[in-house]
Image (cartoon, rainbow, N blue to C red; front, side, top):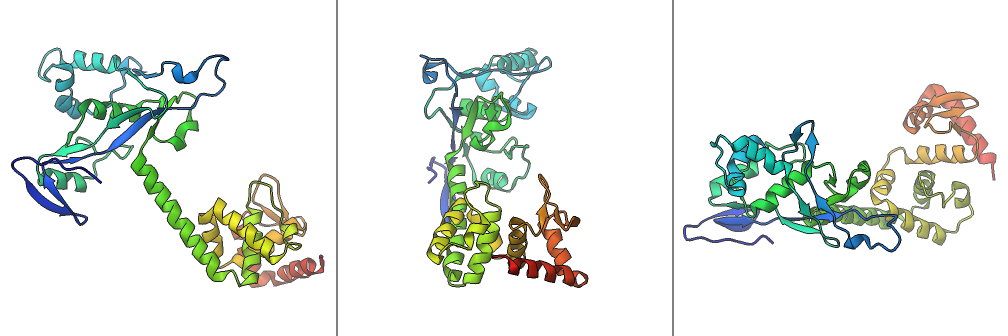
Length: 329
């Protein structure tokens, strides 16, 4: 829950059923964390090594974490020079060129990136403002940073090529040595994942007695399982309890994909096609999604193949496929 900063002249508004009194501190925290180091030198503890954020250049110009207007607004308090000084531009460039910060191991460096609002009008403007940069950050907000040094370093790290904006982006570049950890964002992502898992389980429990549906879902899920642990052919020899256990496992792996398959209006035909592929009646060309029947392409994807088999002009081929599959054990 956000903390409140209450001054002598306060006003109150209601936001999402929470009463906010002004002045108000909208606290937000992120951490700059080190990327886990692999293949450390024998006898050296990577956690004891120094690791720091540094300056970066594009040509002869240093990377700048703020817009020009934001620099004029915030940097005088940091570099002790007013923006109307003849030395202003040099001082600003020198600041960005000399920026450096040690990042400790473990939890990393905690940064307070929240904003303080003196009046509700400024707060309301920022809530409605859509002027954001490519990282979704509000440009030159009405609120003032609660901790200016932390805020500036965060804005710089969002652009710094050695810092990934989240843990999912760590592998995007070999240059990346750090990442931004946002607990609130992580909780929100986990909440979405939790809700998806709950919906998937509800769908599963609701329909688990429809055994034809269970078989069709399993055929499609197993066909798309990249682990290589399961095989469609083995489904025919599984008992019902074993299939239920497998379904639980596959739902746990990808509840969103399960939901997509479970509610697919073409589920039965998709399962039929995958069955034909694994039993050699249809051929999926290696490294593609193209499906062939007797050497002829019938679709460059499973959706195109479905459309092909649903076309009344191709009823004879569909019946041939059904007959061939039926004859197999």
